[in-house]
Image 1: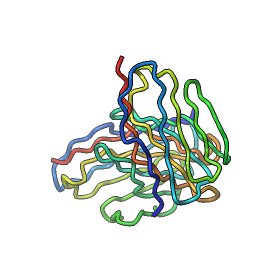
Image 2: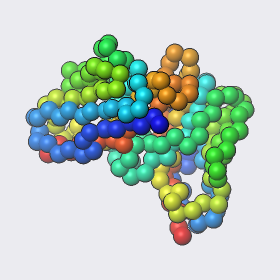
Image 3: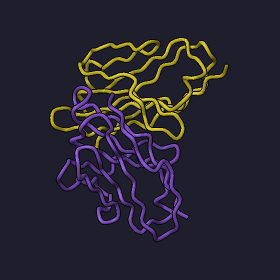
Image 4: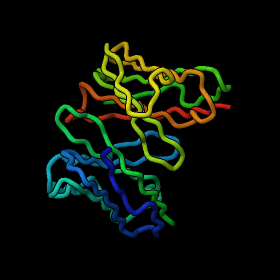
Length: 112
Length: 117
């Protein structure tokens, strides 16, 4: 089946540093999404990308939809302690297919 | 807007019993609901997709007779884990898509932690 390869698996950074994570796939997707999940909670949508090449920001977060439609990255600038959590990429083919495929997640730890 | 709730938030049950988990869209009509399972330190794995008023579509490897899904209204879907066993212990998360958001955006519930003793 379709898979998303998300890296890195985990990151340990100092407060104030920038962070970058990415997802790649062998399949084409028409929508890429980035979620954050806190322990014991459901995922919360951070950024949605709908067009190849699109670059979208949400505060300190920036994400891009790769031009080949097979990859996406998420950058977090000037990290703060509350950025701690698991970040998931997700993608869907589009059209009438609503199913989301999730990456394995990136565990982010921010040291104050 | 676009809030999805789940009940209960956590449940502990004995092996062999059945457990029902509710997923509700509070401020929009959910034409489609999804049920996911997440094991510790793992990603979300889609179990099934349900459309209001019709039978759920299960992913490969998910037993439909064990995980009963009922999407009886546009605001409620239920997942019943029948004859639960310890290996069914997991975090179950629902999501809903419908008359809110854009491009069939899925809104996720807060999850239900199931522990089977």
